[in-house]
Image (tube, rainbow, N blue to C red; front, top):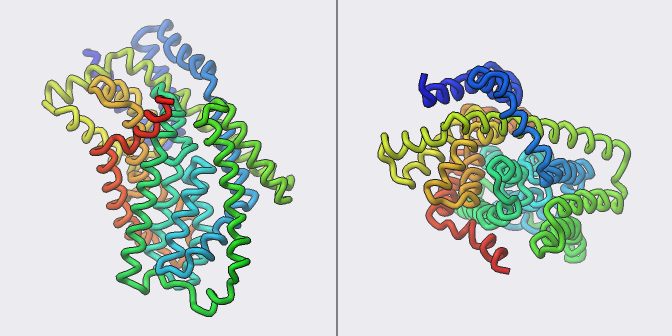
Length: 441
């Protein structure tokens, strides 16, 4: 049996295991270990074993639990609630202002969290009921929350980019910097779409009533701006110090976790329940990610030992005659397809060991490709029938919002995100300018 056929059998076996409903890390790790034993005997165990110890010896891995802890601390302590009130007051007088403010809230939450789940939970529990009460169109605002929360996996400190950096062996700091402007670009496109649509269809996002606007004094507006001080300070101490070279990546994650805890303490919200829930959730998510990364590295090591990367390169370029850009488009389409039934971590585990070496061989920048992968994951999160965000929204939304409403809500936002993806593909400097500027200094 040829190595190409063995690689195909290994890949299809892994997909079959995933379809059985087994845990992702168990399915992938089992297939990797099984094929290593079948191909190389007892000595094959060394391949996944050595990959595991490479992971444990990788110092930046410490950032993962610290960022997850920081996000949950901010969420559980209710700091995001204060922030939404400020956006509510300042943007409410505009047509579609609460929806625009929700996107702004999501950007800030993303910059403090790194996960889309937190943004979804905050948006569905705080922003969604308020906008429904104000007469906003339920389909539009459902799409707003799903699209806005997806920014959490792109805007630094993105946990997905950390995972990509671990598996693809790329510097996480460069990936974070590369995600800044694409994340702001997508947020700007979302806001532009909301503003234009509500301008022509006033009933979709009515402004706050005149009497309510008059009731809010300028003194109160200024006071509410203080809600943004804590997120700004956390972001500055965490990301700003890292970009300026004062702290390392691991130190910046520790600074972020510490400042989030201090913020909760100063606001007198650091109760035993908040601390217990934060630690329990952080531990659960961190362990899940650790096992998945471990299984991914084992699978990638065995797959690479078969020469699967060379085989796929030969298939795309020699047999199919695709240009490098054609190969890149095929990769993005495969992410969109897999995203209908897998989450971002599972997709990364499956294809990163294959695609990243191929991307480098084709002459593309792996940092830029990491941003493309993440944006495509955002789109895949929101595409039926099994988009990750679709089911999260269904679980959190009130009964008046049906699954069909949720499906319809994402259509314009997916179109906007595809435009953003194309812009980053056509103009790579949107992602690469900031990392190149940082390297220069």
